[in-house]
Amino acid sequence: MAVTKIRKISSWTLLACFILSIVVLGLFFGGGVVDPAAENIDYVNTNLLLNWTYFMFVITLVVMLAFAVVKFISVLKVNPKNALRSFVVLILFAILLIATYSMGDDTPIKSLNADSQAFNTPFWLKVTDMWLYSSVVLFALIVLAIIWGQIRKMRQR
Image 1: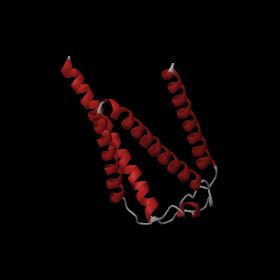
Image 2: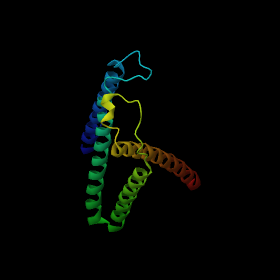
Image 3: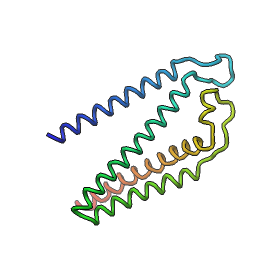
Image 4: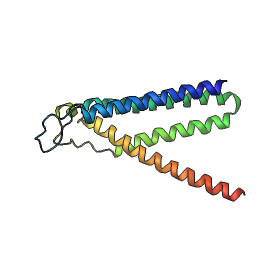
């Protein structure tokens, strides 16, 4: 019964995030431009899109950290060795975020519209680079884990 409830909640949450993301993208691309004759296209709802992506990123981090802490506490009572393993993964993720943040470029971007200028600060530029670099690293790790899992599965046969 609990699995069904969890599945329903996660399905509805995913659907809500997907629909809201589609609405935000629709408002971004369909909201018009500031000056159609300008050389660079400045969308009216750029600020909305940037705020939505940062919101989703922060929510993802908070939920991931909350689940990691809950898992760590629950597993610590039963199997301290596995709890330490999950804690190490959390530490490695924090190191990844710190490393990719330090790799980020804080050079201001030229020719942005007025809405985007609020995010054209060194902090937000580095956070954006951290997000992109971390996504690439995590995607590569996922692909490697899939390949490793398949090789391990083939060897066991």
